[in-house]
Image (cartoon, rainbow, N blue to C red; front, side, top):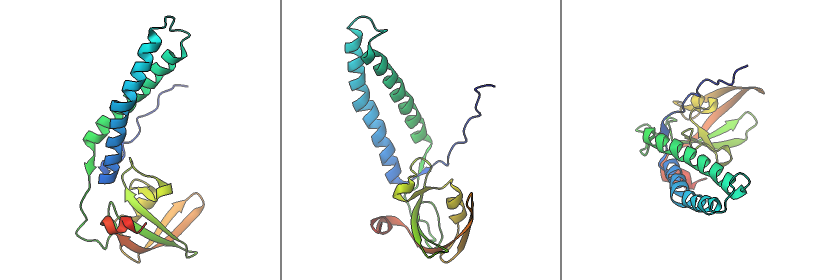
Length: 172
């Protein structure tokens, strides 16, 4: 059995301005704050002699590799992302960045924002545009029925509200 894994499919190259700011803040934190601190710890630990049993040195080097890997990923990903910062002409349809309120068959309402795969967070109501639910929502209008095939069976939702922009974000 080999350890080969085929490359993972890249997510959609779209992000909201808020999502881009979070990624840029993480990049800055890693590169300008954490990395210099860890480098200093490793430098001091290296002065102590035997590195084979020096925990600060071993774990510091491991953390440096993790930081460098994440910095490399964030730098490349931020270069290829497209920031979607304008409201679509037809605000009656679900597009990227929309806040969508869904009502299920039991009458319970859920509110999601359709965002890029780099910023999704279901606990915060942010749904990746690559997810099955978001793909079924894109292009739909108010009062349209959405069907979603899930492991629990087919689910039906009705779109009861679509909002864009700052007012929609404050309503959460």
